[in-house]
Length: 456
Ligand SMILES: Cc1ncc(COP(=O)(O)O)c(C=O)c1O
Image (cartoon, rainbow, N blue to C red):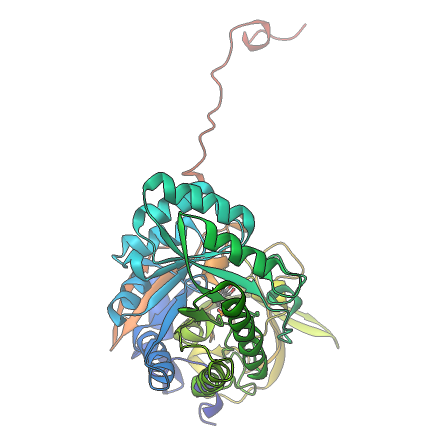
């Protein structure tokens, strides 16, 4: 049997199989594990850059004032921030920490947008001082806070209001955001969005330049974006008539689906771009709005395919007639998505990538939770301890959601390109686990209990 061609769209495009051995960016997966240890996350630089360029081309070719603002929560490191910087896109950050990493890589603050439903005063101060491009204001508390921070710094901060348009995107409840019952944004239907717009126009420390919404993710359908454009742009037109509001910038958010499974393709980027740009232009014409700048915020779909997680097989447990468990050396601490959202992945035995699958197994993580399952019911050739398992489409929301659960060590990350592999994040150590602890054993206090005398 040869390598199943349906894997082509879920592994990085540089992936191939030679003599049954899986290679990413021209290097064998097993060799990567030998050099950098296991578990290991591998990012393919060619795929990362191709992912960015695909978005820039798809939206830019349809509308010249379209900008890609990558949602850093999907994956962020100084390495990737430098790539995004060089490719010329913008970045959407949601914390002082994400902003700090971007700035540390020389990413221009002016190309950053600051999101989040509970930014602290300190984070807002840091962002304003760094010269952040836009703050996406989420609620009245933040509006007042930011106005005060900006005025205290003697600046007028450009802002965009995040609205919740009340559009159901038909995705997992835990990743739905644009509906009325959401912690994010000013709802349009309740009148809160209009009140926020009036307030933002009144405040001296902020300059309202646009409107934003994000429906949720991943969205496999195009229609929710078209519907959001209708609701948002109709609202903008009403605000223009009533309050003289000038919509200069607009964003329908991100949430574009990534392909995780061989048989569940995501719509191509071109399909999203066509649906969003054409309905955006049509609605602007219909509501007589001058065409604003358009920001699009892909996260997962831009990085998922570029990342491959490599794990090593350990224990095996067969429950006759029920299930065969194959345990690996990672799991929910480095990728919580299966446990959190029932997310599904594929798996390939890296050194027998061509072999006929002969058994159905469940790949379990090593952490102390029954829910720590990485891939349920996957068909694999027989595995033995020491085999390397490759899990594709692992570039998004795995490492950025990773934890030290069970005092585990976060894995190393390598970047591959044209046959070279470079360590971009070392594996954590036990010293890292204790680096932030400041408690020390108190010195023994002299007295009867510490005298060493035998109790009577
Ligand atoms: C405001 C905003 N934009 C963009 C995204 C990116 O979503 P995705 O990674 O699914 O594209 C998110 C995800 O939570 C978000 O909250």
